[in-house]
Length: 97
Image (tube, rainbow, N blue to C red; front, top):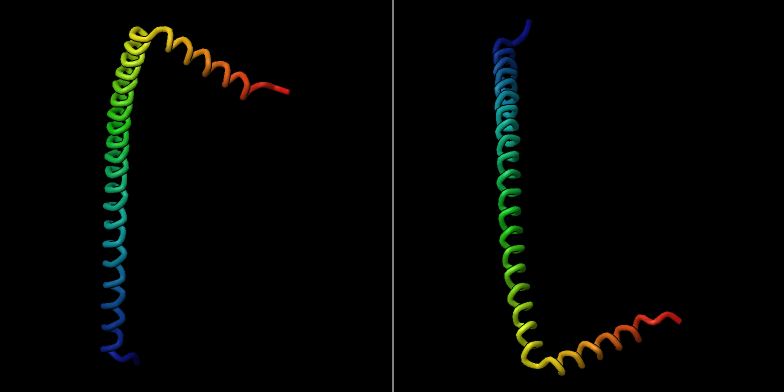
């Protein structure tokens, strides 16, 4: 004959284990849905930041191009000589032997 107290303890433990399994399953579902939302939010944030960075770089490139154009208009001969020297150096550095 089994001890009634012992059987009651075993039944209580079994019941607790079942509740823990259910709670763990609910927690995992919650984590999964949270991870999907977090990943979506992260992707949106990265996309927004990449767009902002691209726009900033494009604006800076346009400003640089305008400044370079103005410099060439102000000093065309100097600009021509600098371009020639840069081209000559580049050709010497990349020359095949």
